[in-house]
Length: 297
Ligand SMILES: Nc1ncnc2c1ncn2[C@@H]1O[C@H](COP(=O)(O)OP(=O)(O)OP(=O)(O)O)[C@@H](O)[C@H]1O
Ligand SMILES: [Mg+2]
Image (cartoon, rainbow, N blue to C red; front, top):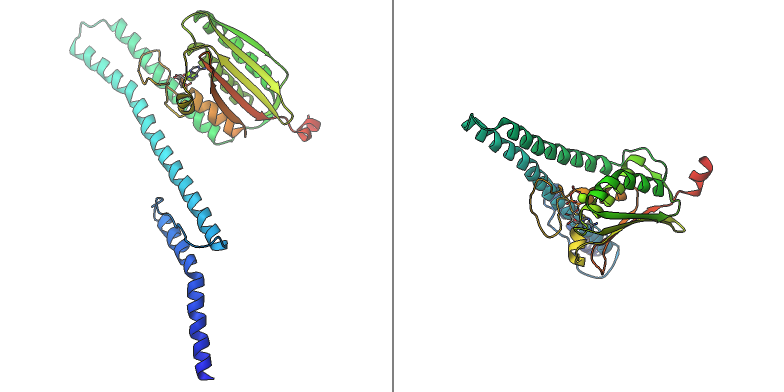
């Protein structure tokens, strides 16, 4: 009896230890992640059982978290760098003026004004990006075609200046969201389509369509050839095509990042497709106004 009891206890203890070993590995991985190391993975071997599924799901979550943290760090580094540039230029301008008291102050003030405006634009774009990301806006019924039309009308003088023709068409496209953010989204897209167009005789097409469950805004423009590889990186913050040149007129490279964040905050999708004849087609697809919201209207 005693032997049987001891044998049973020992057998049970070994069996439980073997069964629960994967849990130990998962606990260890959780502790490592809590301590700040996101690169550790469980990589549980063996057949696909519940433990393996839990470990695999945990590994996937860790990979996503690690990528997200790396993206945030890259963003903070880029933002600091971009914010430092106008401040450094202002300092140089002031230093030069101080060293030479006969310097033309009118020119200095003009240049300081330009640099300052750029810094304000950049800060406003960053604020907008974080506001859209928080999803703290109130949702209203919005007709995407009206919003796109308003953005286009505001930008008509700029299009004229760039020798670009804008053609708008499409149906009423009811959706739910923030009118201000959707106007910002449309403005950024039409603005890009105008300024990143051909040097002369460019065309922009702004089109809205209604699909069974979604509404679509497409902004398409003529322009230089864009490769699919480049197109896939353009929505990253501070990405400016293939060139990273700084001129007074260069954008800050946040326009499409803002569009992407606003689209995501509205549960929509953003697609960038290079046109075979050159230029880009950008499509934003948002959920159509829900029928329940319809009756509440
Ligand atoms: N419609 C377009 N056609 C061709 N290239 C485009 C188009 N829209 C964007 N791009 C490319 O993508 C890059 C990133 O665009 P994004 O709007 O994010 O920044 P930006 O226009 O350079 O600056 P800003 O922050 O002032 O908008 C641009 O520099 C340009 O090279
Ligand atoms: Mg832009």
